[in-house]
Image (tube, rainbow, N blue to C red; front, side, top):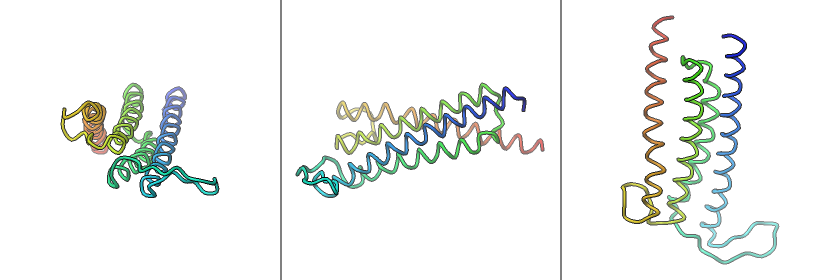
Length: 163
């Protein structure tokens, strides 16, 4: 690996780690929404007072939205760690990096739509506008992650046979 390639690899690793941290923070913030849903009010100790409001959504929807941020943030960190082992050329590494960043953000954004708009689970196209938005946000990411994981698996196993 030459110096330019090494510098590029480090840049992509930093991008993945940085976006991973932001996605994790998103998950943490959504966790407060989950907490407020469970409490049936908005209250943060030691701040005095509370706002009596039941947030929309379900337990499962809030838990999933919270965990999607946590899991996708950590997934970006894992990709950053194994990036030098993935046998792609520089352009492939760049595309992989931005692809995983796109996938992580679209999944966490789509997962937040369900608790905020309870009739928008993104399981099928249609039903209502928010469901359609969630579907169109979520499914390209799912297709993308399947394609990327298959490409990584295929190329990595092919490279292993050559060693």
